[in-house]
Length: 240
Image (cartoon, rainbow, N blue to C red; front, side, top):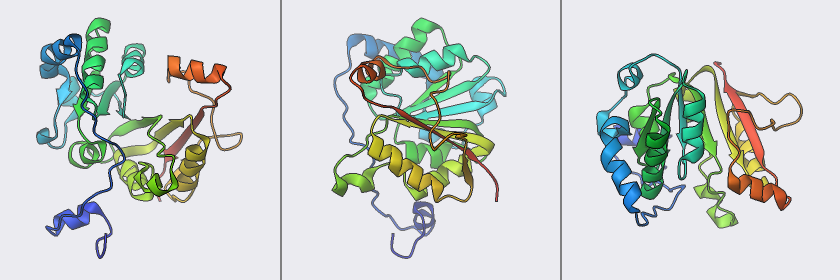
């Protein structure tokens, strides 16, 4: 980033710096049900970056703690979490529109009212819409591991991203990651251990057992039957 230490600093100086994306935008085709779900629910559940910094109390109609999930896929587990924890508010961020439609369809069927979604780049959502020191937990489950070494720079878990996450968490708030790719789990641990303002919550080794609040997916069950592992990592934000 040349003379600028962060993207925000470059923007403030009026300089555009092209960013390495951690995802590939794949629009895909929406099913009729996904299209209907977006049409029926976006007005009440959809969020956009032009709203600016959000007032969570106004968005949800209450002051309950807020959980953000980045990359919720088709949204089934996110809806399940929202349904199981009505005392929390959830915001999902996803760039795959069919996933957004599927999530809204699941939410409508489940009758959840404590869930909102963005169809946008998570890095930009965090910077433009999520107030500092406002999140109870940030979830990053099974992000693209970018297996090839030349693509490792595209992994979302990097120092700058982690520091941006810290800004958004309340003191003691959790950054919860999960991956089924052990080299990426090791990368996550390496990045997190380099942060002075996070502490690993694991009490036995580096990883934690899957918390009850994170639903196990069919994909995960299938992988376990094939002997594949899943690594959960939870770090708590602390002040220096």
